[in-house]
Length: 84
Image 1: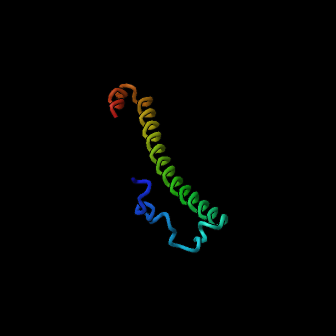
Image 2: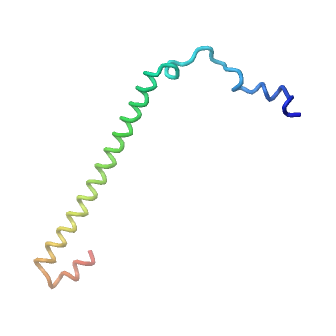
Image 3: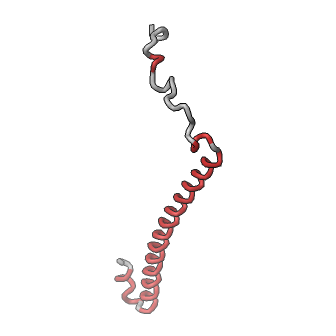
């Protein structure tokens, strides 16, 4: 019964409304340029994220180095420094 129902065949996607294909869909060069722009945008965001992670890692390593230097210079207090 569903196979012969004509209402199902009148769905929106069956008959295209646009007669012209958009240039970004038809032209391969434009599609490639869009992909390149998206990759550049992703790379910029990734660069910002990596920069923030680098700052955090440097801060952490600087703190670790400070704790190490303090524990070498003041060995009796090194147990207190281990808490931090």
